[in-house]
Structures are given as C-alpha cells and as structure tokens.
Image (cartoon, rainbow, N blue to C red; front, side, top):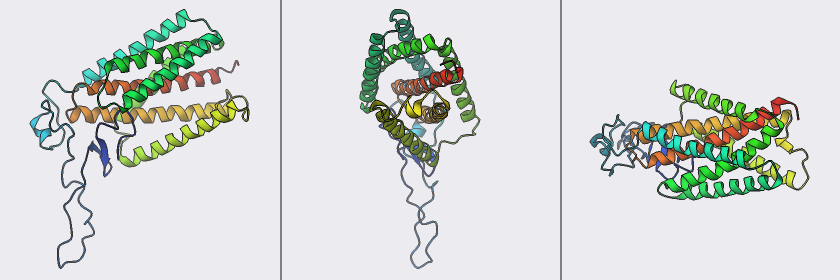
Length: 300
C-alpha cells in the first residue's frame, strides 16, 4: 500500500504484508510442487526476500542496502540523517513562528486582517499541493509555504486571543504535549504502523474530511447554524478531539516514514520533505487544539 502522506506518496514508500518498506515486491517462493497436494502456503512466504530499496542506485547508500539487505545504521555521508530532519524541521517551524509573530504584531484584529489570513491560508494550501506533487523537494517552496502558513496562524491566533486570553499559549503547550506523547508511544512500540493500521486510519480521516466539507457547505448556505458540527459547544469539542487524534495518527505515519527513509539510505534532500510533512501535521494539531482550548474556556 502506498503512503497516505502526499509528501511521501511519490517517494516509493509501501507497506506489504503489514511491514514497512520501500517499493516492496511480492514474494515468488512457495508454489505447489507438481504431483503433490496443493500447498496451503502457495501464496508465498512474506519473508522470502527483502523489500527492494528505492535508493538502490544511490551512490550514498551502503553496499548492503544496494543489494536489498535489511536496513542498517549508515556510516556514509550525503544521506538523510535524523540531524538533517531536525535541522530542516527547525527551519520550517521557525519560519512559521516568525511570520506568525510578525502578523500578530503588525496586523490589527479587523475584517481586512481576516481576509488576509484567509488569502494566506489559500496560498499556503496551493504551495503545499504543488510541493506534494513535485518529484523533488524544493526548499524555497517549502519555506514559502511555511511563511504564508505563519501569517494565517498569526492572525488566527490573535483573533482567538482577543476573545479567549491566553488560548494560543495553551494551544502551543497542548500541541507539544500531543506530539511528545505520540513520539513516546511510537518509540515504545505501543503503535505499529502496518498496512492495516494505515488503511483504517486513512479511511477514518477521509470520512472526517468529507463530513467537515459537507458541514462547511451547510453552514455557508445557512442550513446549519452556529457552525454546525464545528460549533463552540460540546459537539464541537467532540469533533475537535477526533481531529486531534487524527493529527496524532498522521504523526505516527510521519515518524515511520522518516525512520524508514534514514534506514534505507534516502538522499539528504528528502529531509526537507520530512520537515514539510511534520510541519503540516503540527499546524493541523495546533489549529484544532486552539479551537478546543477556546471551547473549554467557556466564556464565549
């Protein structure tokens, strides 16, 4: 199954037989012998061969990985490392934070600012889609996305802070808590990112997005009042919690894809895509956390 994350879906990531790999091929061993009873395991042994490595021709990949051996800790240069991912993620998230602070400090709370925020969000969405369908990472495009996303978050956060004082700070703490807890659970092995796990999670996520799109249309045409499912009441809180759980699900996919990219010798430029994916997921969690904090503040 191909990756659900649009950032990585064009990078050859696949999960066959419930285990993660890159462009894993179906095993061929195990067919029934002539003149014998049919072999109940004729479908093939999932361990008959190692998954193919998409970076097999990468000159930076270790010799063992070029021959399809299981991933090992790399000792060469020019390949993606965890330090690369952390540094690129700091750059993208730092860009989001800087432009959010600037937007908060410069733009007043006004209808024109709201229009600018919506425009920035649309531009950020377009840039994200363009990068998602590019075959190679474009640092300039990714940083431009982060800048426009920052403008949107700055105005959005200022709007919430004007009504619910301190809500953005609490949302930041909540986002850090969710991200940290998800990472700890993932590293502890309590969650295994398998094909079944990803399929179920993506089915729920797609259903959630479709329901939210329908809800938005109903609100826009006046059929649903007070935001419908996205109201600032108990129903809105339940929807917000579901959205945050889905954000944590996407984080686990990001963690697994980064882990496999490092193990299989992805080129260093792939670290920009890892940072891009993490940034999109963290923005999702922050926005939902901000709404949830406002709902629980209860002084609307």
